[in-house]
Image 1 (tube, rainbow, N blue to C red):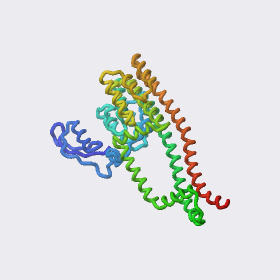
Image 2: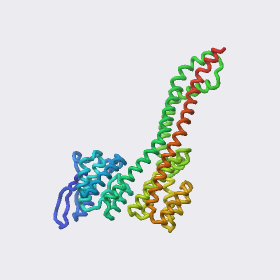
Image 3: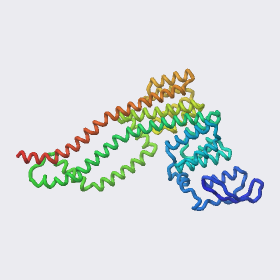
Image 4: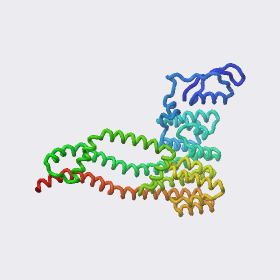
Length: 404
């Protein structure tokens, strides 16, 4: 954390100056005023004292730590607090052994805030990488005096969430990788191999089979416009990336991805598993249902499902049970809605949601296996057909000449 120098008046109205650690100039003024000082001047740290990594993260240029680092931090903090180690000492011990610079900086800031009298949840909320779900659970743990249990639950929750995300990414990346390699092979054949045979095939003076003429025309087109096609591809990728980041674009893309044969089911089941697991963890930690649903909305990546959960929350606020609006969502299984209804009636909804998330996670595995099995032969047949068609187009005139 950067060290700022300051000048002004202390709480007794006398001239004072000193140094204070803060995330920014604004944060430094806030901290000093909280101590009763009147700030007249803030002097930022020199370039030699400046924490460039923290500044980049603060400005949104650098990246914070990932899920794996957060998981390990939570696990270590849970173990230490469970062993009776005070929070500040636990943070100091973890800080000394942490390798990730972004997380190391966050731990240092959290420890400083806690030492100044802030709660752990409040201190974490100021740092990037600790989302609303995480901070609300920590707050519930602090209020209930069960912080070690909550951190243990958080660790389990993060591990399962990361597992689901990796499974979905793996399922989606496989067809892209195979298709990409296939496209490069086809590009190489059309751009470099076919032109070497073109003059030999056309110089014979014989009429070429339609498939051969088509491949030659395609090769000529690629040769003439390949540069423009690459530029167009880059421009299209940039536009697509920008478009899917807009609210309307993300909704359209998420709707499309949910309806992709086989893989759409993976996305739906994965999102429902995430929703069920998050809601179960929050309710089991004492967070109110309305607040828990609000946090779930923030954690779901798919905007279509997120909007549907917003509608569910609205209905619950109006006095409906959780089951009623969930059962009206067409992709939400009726059996699962009935299981939630049983959980509501018996007062064990958090336990029921945890079981439901296990069911969805198993279904994600099955959906990924089914999608992969369906896609592998399909991709091989399509790529094999294209490559085989090009080779036939090249050699067919030679065979016809030999036969004549």
